[in-house]
Image (cartoon, rainbow, N blue to C red):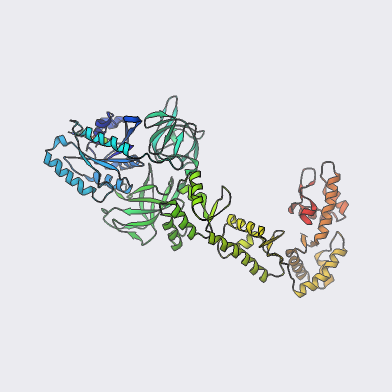
Length: 639
Ligand SMILES: Nc1nc2c(ncn2[C@@H]2O[C@H](COP(=O)(O)OP(=O)(O)O)[C@@H](O)[C@H]2O)c(=O)[nH]1
Ligand SMILES: [Mg+2]
């Protein structure tokens, strides 16, 4: 169990940790000189059955609340310390508010310096404590009167802590590994060491992790878990990791970084959250207020966009988007604290809902519905509601990542929720069954409408059809829907075009009449079709109109446009491709030159080159240093 102290400066936090563990947690020379805690201190007490109490001693001075925040993140148990002579003071209340906002609900109060006051003053102080904890997560916390000087009450408090350590179930080590770095140092011989509280998952010697938000790879060379050398560490423990990485040194790792599994690496500057403004705030919290943002051991400046109502009154909650000046690592459910622009006062705090929120449309009604759905702490409920609100499909990898689900946990969730799953491991999408059926029907209907509007054309290409759908659909979802419809023969493919089964391009009477004249002209010319202008002269149309007509026929698949002024019949193309095939077969290395092809086909130099380039584009041939080789069968491409 990890215990953090909290409370006003000079109320006896550090001396109490020493009385409980024998360790003086003030470790910096300046702290010793001034008798004042500046940064976090750490102490451990090992007791029965390998159980360990880990203490994080925090500074009480108002200037070091930032360090205090890094110390109380991820702890199990809060030890609020109040001196009997002073009673509650400003940082007693601020620290208590912070613990409340972070949701720390297990703890105790130590009433220190009882040796300095008469018994009735101690009783009075206890009443004052009762008043301030009322309505907070620590309202039921027991109070222990102690003196760290005489030792009075210390055994009772220690016993209580040890009992709590046994009673509090070990945190499940679910999720991908995340350690919030609160200290870094180097040890000669071992190298770089980072310490911190493990938020989730587990770690073992040899693991490959990332330094986040920078995204630099590291490897774990050694582990100390709860102050003892270990092969592994897990959620709820304080760990020291000896890490190495080609791209890191002691200057690249700082308090506030995460060391985590790749799946938990989500650097973000924009996150949706639910916040609560402290009752003690003098006025309503306004839109776009500049703040100091603290999540785990990290701190960043930024602004808060209020998504509903324009402002949040003291004591009230509201949906917001946090817009940060630099990226931090945040995941759904992470608690955080907001302090004012000059970092003098805690304003409120909250819980991350979506760490990957969009820049645009953050307050649109549809988006707010989605944020509210994502706010459900239960993944099954959240995903079911998000699916219902997202007929275009939900990016399952994003969902699993933002909730820090390990691969097997994600898989179990996908199995539990009723949805259609599409795509591969990298682009997995979930879609509600009704939305999926609706999409498939919409595709068939879109094709019908397309054919009706353009009876002389074969059908749209894949991407065109996707863009005509009434609802935005990602390529992953659309391709999966097409594949299903094709295999069920509800739609068909005609080259690159999609059609309804049995659809044939039907031409207008004029086009049909023109085609009856042009088609024989083209076939009479053998392998070398006439130019557009020659055709125009023959059929008595102007060049432009003739070209438009021929292009229409090409779109319908009746012709292929090989050059600006030359259209080929499919059967002519096939014959020309077969000539190339014979040449390639006869050549020892399978290649042939443009010059040789010109001689064989009799097309003329320019047209031969244009045709070979057309072959390349069609995926029939490819240029090499020697000339050209064939990459597909003529029949397959032009048959
Ligand atoms: N008489 C008495 N003095 C105490 C007690 N606890 C702490 N002190 C003194 O109060 C001062 C501040 O203690 P410290 O532990 O540094 O307070 P912190 O700022 O809360 O960490 C020191 O001079 C301590 O010796 C106590 O129980 N009784
Ligand atoms: Mg101290």
